[in-house]
Structures are given as C-alpha cells and as structure tokens.
Image (cartoon, rainbow, N blue to C red; front, side):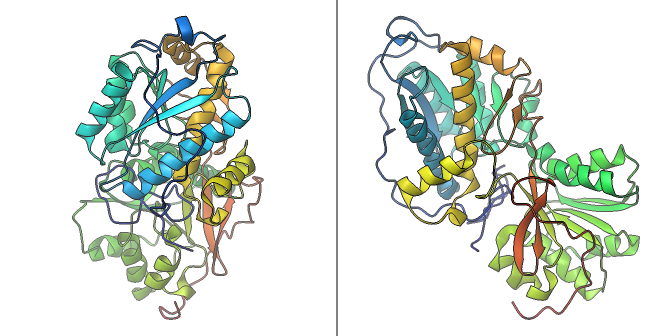
Length: 438
C-alpha cells in the first residue's frame, strides 16, 4: 500500500499526502496518454454566461466545450495530474456512450501551477476567450474558492469534487456545487453509526486548526453532541504545533473510551505513540487522515498497534456505486496500472462530470442558469462516490463517506454497513501491542 495525500485545503501541504479522501497514493506523475478528450480551445462556443444559442443548440453536432484549470506544477501537481486524469476518464467514457445530448465532449485544460492567482486568470480566459459552455472545478479548497467567484461573475455554474472546505460555501455563492463529501460530512458516517449502536458517553477530541481538518472533526462532534455524547476533551492546536504531549495527556486523563483526532501525519502518529507510552487504550479511535498512509503509518506506530484504528474516505476501487466498475475499467484502459493505485482524485473529478451530464440531459439545454436552478431543485444524482443531493449552500448533503478500519494488517472498508464489499466492524480495538515489527 502506497501513501495517500491528505490535505485539500492547501493550508498545510506536505509532499505526497492529502486529506483522507484518497484510497491510495495520489497518482504518480505519469505522462498523460492521448485520449478522445484532448485539450482544445478553438471553434465557436456559447457566449459568456453559458447560454446555448446558434450553433450550440441541442440539435447541433458541434462538441460541448468544458473548461478546467488543473495543477500540473507546484504543490498540488500530483493531485492535479490525477484530477486531470479523472476528468479525461469521464469524458472518454461519456463520449463512448453518446456524449451529452448526442454531442461529444471536448475538454480544455489550463495549468494553474497550484496558484490562486493563476486559477483566476485561467477561468477568466476559459469563459471569456475560449468561450467554453461549462466549467468544472480545480483541485483544493485554496483554488476552488477564488475560481468559483470568477465563475459566478460570469453566471457560470461550477461543479467540483475536490474543494470541500467551509470557505467555499460560506461565501454565499449559489453557483458552486461539491459532488463529494465536504469537510463537515467526512466523519458523519462514523458519527451516525456510533450514535445508532452505542449509548451516549464521553468522547475526547483533538484537532489541528486547519480549514479542512477542523471542520471534519467538528462535524462529527456537533452531530454526537446533539445526541447526548459529551466532550470529555476538546483541544484545538495551531498548525505549527510539534509537541503534542500536553494534549495527549489531557485525553489520557479524561479516560474517554472514544477518541476522535483531527490530524494529519505525523500528528496522529505522535498521539498514538504517546497513548502507547502511557498505556492508554481507547476502545475506539478514528483519525481524519493518517491511518490510510499504509506502510508509512504501520512503520510509525508499529504493526501490532494498527488494529481497530479507523479513518474516513470517500471512495475505494471496489465500490458498487453507479458506474464505478466502468470508471475503473476506462481508467485502466487509458493509463494502465492497478485498480488499487487509482487516486480518489480520479473518482471525485469523474463524479463532477457525471452530475453535469445527468443535469444537462434532464434540462436538454446548455444554459447555465437552467443548470443552476436544477441543481438547486432537490434532485438526487448518482455518482461513483454515491448519491449526490445538494444543500442550499452547494454541499453534498447526500454524501455517505466510507469508514475504513485496520483489521489483521489490512485497511478494509467497514462503514456504511450493507455497502458493497464492507466488512464487519471491530467495535472494540484491542490493547496496544509493541512498537516494533513494522
């Protein structure tokens, strides 16, 4: 198992890791293979505002043009490559099955270098110069927030799957829609299961003050608090923190049997190491990210200490959700490799395309205003990540993130119960073993 990336907020980037919505590593920088949806910016298209007219009516054979800014260099480059692959995989699959409204999809990509300034320039160009019919979102909250503002200025909808921090939705824009589980919903599947299967009891929380990670922790805490689960400890620590001893000691002193950590590596590893040293054995432990780091996580905490630890994720290759098997097959056809190494970025980007196709097909129109109205109509869409149902602020209120758990040396899906391929959950993790034996 290779490392995953951990943070899509962009506020605390570490090479090769990201917020826990990726099954395995962010795809390596493979040379992108040619596909049916190669970049282009030529030809006539809809005017600013994206209203179909003239040659872009639903009866024309001209391609439907979709613009995307992707991070092919800079901090987010590995994720940017995977995001581009996801969009290309979707377009190739959709084109092979009739396109949208009987018209082929043509993608235009511009690289933003992981820069909030460049992403603004890119979307302005895509809309005003390239005159694309639709835009899809970039990678990360850091880039999605300014990109959605530009799209809104020109009355374009921005469907996206990889920018779920609260700042995207708190702007009050009505044009941005996240098809993935946003930060607030990342641990909701765990919280719902806990509330349904356990009596209310104290829970210990610790979280970094990160614009994506903290809302992930707070989402679970708010849900559980409303159902009688008191906070034995609630500690928020600055991003620059390097010594977690006092926070870990407070959790240990609380004696809470349930611990929720809003951490990224190596923070979570340090907490676990401290718990081991203090012989503190919570029955249940979930981290926002880190346990899905595979061999890196095992080495940090010891193979005998992974058992029962949980982590949320939005997708995995064995999912039985809509078109997932088709997406995996299309991706492997285009890029090779193994299903287990497909980044969740691919699924998140693919999902945005799926929802766009369903909505435009329903409307029988390329009009962005009609698209926005329909996405706000309480309609439910299908995706490789599960149901998509947009709340008023554009978050996916229908999201049902998976929860994975270490069991006998393997990270396996355990929640939601009844989902395809999930294993029975271990409700009580065993006492810590030794720290050796990675």
